[in-house]
Amino acid sequence: MDVEHHAPPPPSGPVPWDKDFAFRLLADMLRIRRMEEKSAELYGAGKIRGFLHLYIGEEAVAVGALHALQPQDNVVATYREHGHALVRGLSMNSIMAEMFGKREGCAKGRGGSMHLFDAATRFYGGNAIVGGGLPLAAGLALAAKLRNEDRVTACFFGDGAVAEGAFHEALNLAALWKLPVLFCCENNLYGMGTAIERAEAQTDLCVKAGSYGMAALSCDGMDIVDVHEKTREAAARVRAGEGPLFVEYRTYRFRAHSMFDAELYRAKAEVEEWKTRGPIHTFTARLKAEGKLAEEEFLALDAAAMKEVEDAVAYAEAGSWEPVEEMLADVTTPPEAAP
Image 1 (cartoon, rainbow, N blue to C red):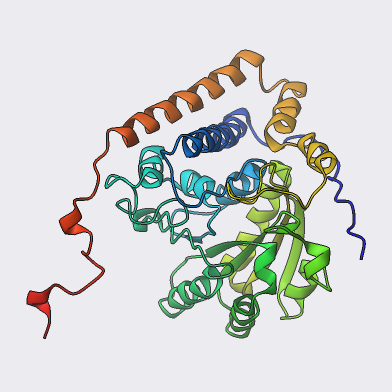
Image 2 (cartoon, rainbow, N blue to C red; image 1 turned 45 degrees about the horizontal axis):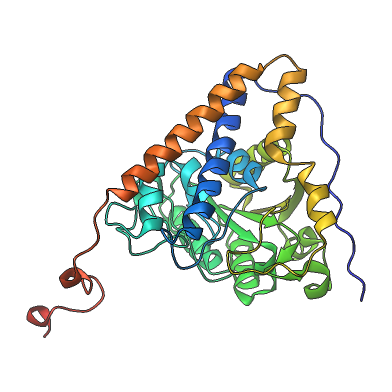
């Protein structure tokens, strides 16, 4: 069958926030973008190894959504999670060190790019298996409900996960038990190298979620205003006891699925068209048009992001490797501890 041409949506209206909050969100998008660009460079240099999935183009989703949550909430992410981890509060130093495989990383260098983790910020992955985070999110939400905790669990996953059995099992149980889960679907229109029209008979993902009796809404994932406002509304409803809620973020990645992807499955013209709706430059343009941002202020935010990246790379470079004699720690039972 013919694959539908994916055209980006038009921009929305005025920015409804004060200057300080708008700057905070713009700064976080720049931090993600500069960190990801440097990560691609470091991967090419052999400093970062294994798999690397970049978030370039999708920054508005992580930033807009995570700023709508509260510190006590849980966050479960996918393998494309560097930006989520950074916005959630992990230091760029610990993220970069982890991608280098150094002991100073957030998972002591054992997880790498796809397995960032930090219990202190309630950031539970980084999960490499497609759809693997969905049952974990349902479990975290069940624990919160049984303990009567004021805690929403936000679970991020891609459109490719919608085809997995874990998606349907998790949504079914969350709806059945009215669990406080916010299902955050980052629909970038391609599950690895497959267009959504080639994999899903029903491409309206909100209809799929709605089949489980939960509320579902869609937003423009390239527009940080739309992302934040709708996520804030959705999180408030989940926190109020309405049960789980599904949010679809219509977004687009500008880079290949991973650094191993030859990217032969989508037209270059489509990618370039979506780049005209890039979340950073469109938000910047809106702020400037409304008199909330001057060029020198933007340059200062960008310079700060670049400096943070430089410092993080230096931190990772200076980090230490795990000694060979410790590599089986937490993997096998020491002989002296065996029964």
